[in-house]
Length: 135
Image 1: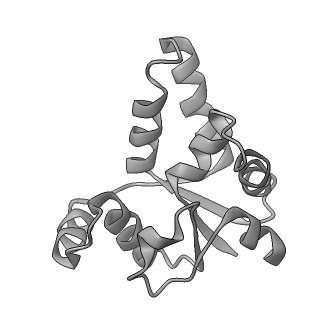
Image 2: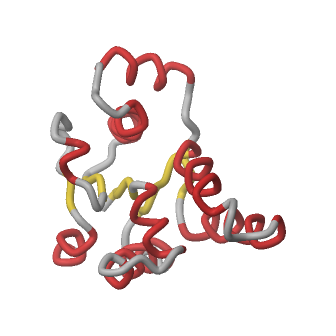
Image 3: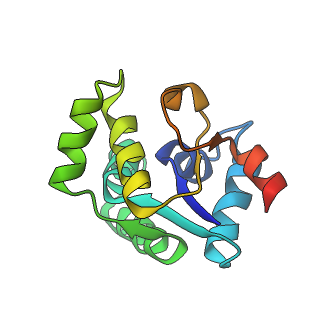
């Protein structure tokens, strides 16, 4: 099963955000253990690091990037992905980019805490709790 993990799921784990932490952590662990093929985009890594910048020093941020590289397949965001996302005219450009990358690499499900952000997606979008029921 190929999953694109939205940045908000990873951030829920790294910042221990309740009530999302437990199910999000299990999804990330399933990727790390190879029970699913978990993907995040290079754009997500940049967004995650931006969110964490105030709470972590440089060494800790470096360790986070290394851990993400172990836990997930990090898919590059191409210039053509950005153009396709812009052409979609979605309300949230970042979500449109995630969707375009997911389409390009053949993702089965997008995993996000905010399903409504992907209401125009033809790829099924599941919350972490929903995807755990499938695994």
